[in-house]
Length: 123
Image 1 (cartoon, rainbow, N blue to C red):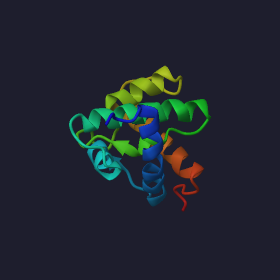
Image 2: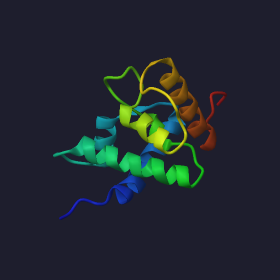
Image 3: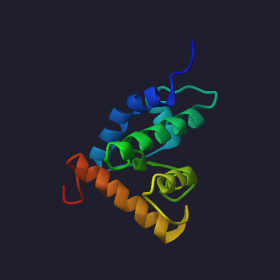
Image 4: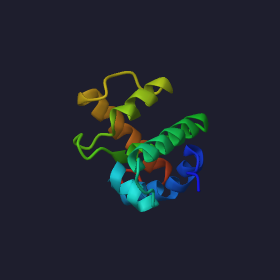
């Protein structure tokens, strides 16, 4: 059996990420892979490919980047560098993949996701 395309996998991740965003939390790439039933080998890599496909689809549809609710276990609450790289390619972010500017962009994008789903900071 072949693995689903990143685009097909992204649509399977969407309800999981929407639920996480509505709860006002984040989750790690590994936790997302496990929640979605993405099995090794290369589970994190396939999860990341799906998140990148989701980011492209969200940008094309004018939605906030739902992938922002996924963070690296090793980056103090920030997504992996690829999130920032792709956000830059999509014309949404211009800056480093770490530090205060990255943290601010990430926080704002998470808030945009939550607001779009009806759960802003005031909820």
